[in-house]
Amino acid sequence: MGLSIKQSEFTSEEFDRFAAKVRTDLTALTRLLDRPGFGEGESSIGAEVEFYIVNPDLRVQPINTDIAASVQDPQLTVELNRFNLEYNLSPQAFKGAPFARTEQELLRAMQRINRHAAPLNGELVPIGILPTLRQSDMGAKVMTDEPRYHALSNALIQQRGEPFSIHIGGNDVIDLEADDVTMEGATTSFQLHWRVPAHRFADYFNAVQLVTPIALALASNSPSLFGHHLWDETRIALFKQSVDSRSPSHRTWKHPPRVYYGNGWSRSAWELFAASASLYPPILPLMSEEDPMAVIDRGEVPELAELRLHHGTTWPWNRAIFDHNDGGHLRIEIRSMPAGPTAVDMCANGLFVIGAALAVLEDIRHLTSILPFHYTEHNFYRAAKYGIGADIIWPHKDQVQLQDAPLLNVARDLLPRAREALQRTAVDEAEIHRLLGIIEGRIQTRMTGARWQRQVTESFFRSQTTDEAFKSMLSLYMSHQKTNTPVHEWTLSP
Image (cartoon, rainbow, N blue to C red; front, top):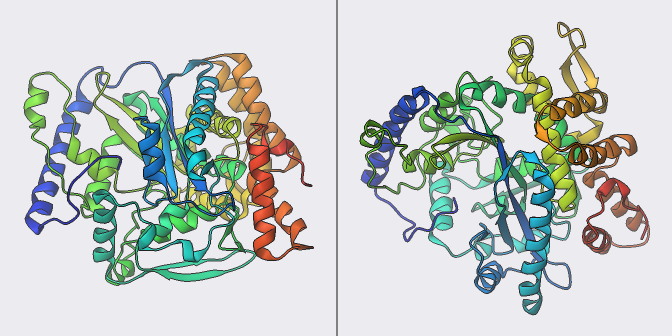
């Protein structure tokens, strides 16, 4: 969705031609995946971090295009809403200290962007949902004025045929309707890319699917919306509902929404791309000149632009990525983790989810045989709602019997296995010790970004109004965030 386009409305013929080209690309992808040696190469990581922009009063500041124009950095892109920006971090080989390099690049980028934002009364905040966000901040007026976002909103609204309905329960409950997709922009995330061997893609993908609920709970940082305390990861429910384009007739036969956890354990990379093509109508029918079959016949790697564009307008929480660069390869995009609290916290989340996936990888075919997929989806939403307080369904140590277990107990058992798995990679021991030590600290203190936000806000409630309490908490959050100290070490008092 980072592409630049010039139109926001399309004809039915354009949609038909685009859908046909997607099908051609799928056939080409089959041939490509069958090519000996395709997608082999060293493992690497990359990441994208989304930010809120706030003003000195800690309210949203809708100036993303002004900041981007001032910074002039191709790695910085504007997001759906005018108070959001995204920074695309450089790919790093998965050896040495890849996350330390990512962390330092992110810290430098934030400092540089903030220097440009300050004269415009703006400042970046990495946080899942801004605690001071108001419902009056949302709506068509706040959408970034770029054709791709207008096209996205128009298509999803047309497919749905009625306003988007948002219902989120929790300690509190919120019910509202939205006439556009800008509620999606209230959610900001840390999206991790992990290049994996193409010939074992399904095993790696399933391993990530299995451990994502645990990583999500430990990373949770989005406990509120519009002054309501909701899920530990309210983002998960909000994002899913804010772009749910299903019409009432589709909902009756349980058609999956465009934001979903999966349709079952994966058997191949190809089926993940094929599912997005078969389940969801196109939104942005932009055509390229490429003949992918001719490119493959020449022994080269096609871009598959239409397939990649269409796949990018579906939002599974873990997404398969095809990249034609570097001889062509596959990545897993891990999309569920929130932005913040700090650069080092996000890097710890990234290393943990990879380490946890590697820890279960060799047993993954057995584990997916005994654990029905809908239990893993259940675990994901339990983790989003209850965070580290969730109970999840998990294989017993004998790997035969399933049990309902406290998520923290599962995390406690998985952490040393993740450490051992990472020690078998080319990542430095110091990197593993430093970042997994942060995860261990969260487990021991039972403290995440979501729990910190909730507890501090509730302490302010004793002497302040709801608005004042959330603002005071955010001010304290931002002061801690600037130190890059892991969240489990933050004080709970001003």
